[in-house]
Length: 58
Ligand SMILES: [Zn+2]
Image 1 (cartoon, rainbow, N blue to C red):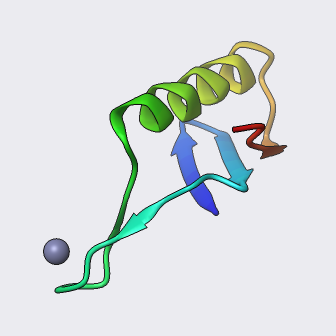
Image 2: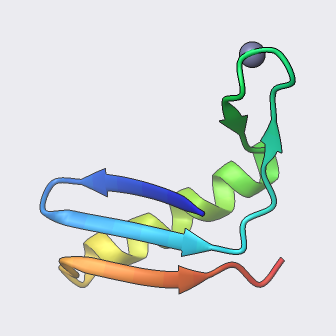
Image 3: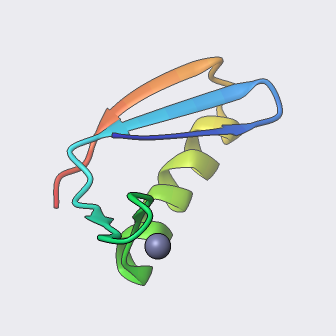
């Protein structure tokens, strides 16, 4: 699950394939997934959603 905020909008995206670093345990996204998540966030911001829960179709 990835959550990000932009102004008053919070976007939660479930089902995002993330890689977890074996050293520090932080997760990171591939460039393609990061682009996709950001595009979904922009859309939520565009229609002034306060909380948007989405599922990644990847
Ligand atoms: Zn690391």
